[in-house]
Amino acid sequence: MKFDALRRHSRFDVDFAVRVEMENGRAFYGKSSNVSQGGMTLRHSESLADGDLVQVAFSISFDHKRIHTPAIVRWVSDPIDGVYTIGLEFAEMDPQFADALEDAINAKLDRRAAQRFPVRTKFELETQQVGRRRIESFARNVSETGMRLVASEPLESGDRVKLRTGSRTGNEPVELRSVVRWCAEDDGLRRYTIGVEFEGLDEGSEEFVSGLISFSGKFHARLQSS
Image (cartoon, rainbow, N blue to C red):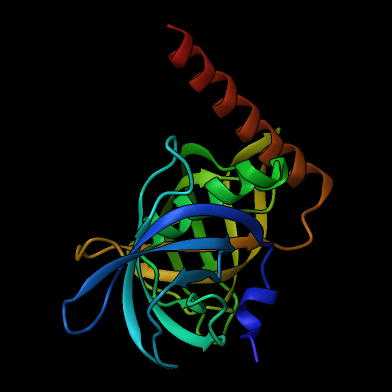
């Protein structure tokens, strides 16, 4: 049975080369027939075994970053004309490659709502669990659905947080209710990169996020045209 992870993500058909390196160091090139944020299917004349851990490297297109990530073999079809189709699930993908893959997929699917825009905005991050903590953080990028932050302390996937910054009108601060989707140590430094998804933003908070996106988009458009 084909693994569920591929079905939980939007997929699109592709046809690009994928470098596959096995645990014994042997490498070969196959062809991917579709890809999602959760995994891909691979075609090759040589089979792999369920559960095999491999390293894959690929580029969705020439104008997108090359992705490097471990992957686990989840299923292998019977060969057709001597070619196997192999289902791979991405495992522990580095956040920078996860972002690059998401951006490439969004570009292909024209999902503008999830397009990321670079920012550098300071937020106070307040956890909502028992033993609430307040942590200083900076936003690295933002979309209409969430934000990527850098903080001095780690959080757990599923943690609910409030992000506060500045003011939107008068002295009223911005408060963005969010849920942590992933957290990873940032390049071995004593800081952490955290991906959050917005939850139930009020009208003022939505306007603030739209303003961040608009400012970033215009600023980088001017840089590219100069």
